Image (cartoon, rainbow, N blue to C red; front, side):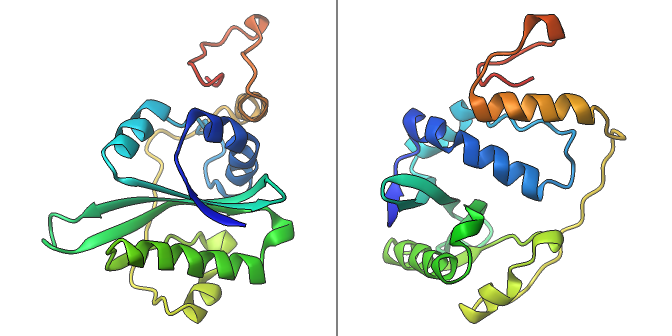
Length: 182
């Protein structure tokens, strides 16, 4: 059910619908378009800095966790893992999710990670679950939009396109990149 997987193009394609659901569920800024930079992730993966853990049920992807693992320059000798993404299909949240988080920690510990940093959205707080696993809250992150934000209806259309891995409709008159989003 739980596995460490390579962040391959096939996994990206398989994860696209989950990524879109995840983004819809947690984003504070829905007008910022979901458009993962696969090339940057691939370079980080090739450099050994990306860990991708998955949850599958009879082969179907139902959850994932993605970490950046580095030896931090400010704490020489301390290998740390920073969670970049965590998603679990709602049907698998609860006990399975807790087991998955613990499994990820074990996998990271085996490779010498000293500290795991996980992010918790205020609107989707799973901090009590992390506390049960031994985590402590140590920081609050604040965000401020500097551009004013806009384009919510365009974002919904782009997110649907991303999830379906469709190219944009030329009649919409918008630029597209390789991911099929604008």
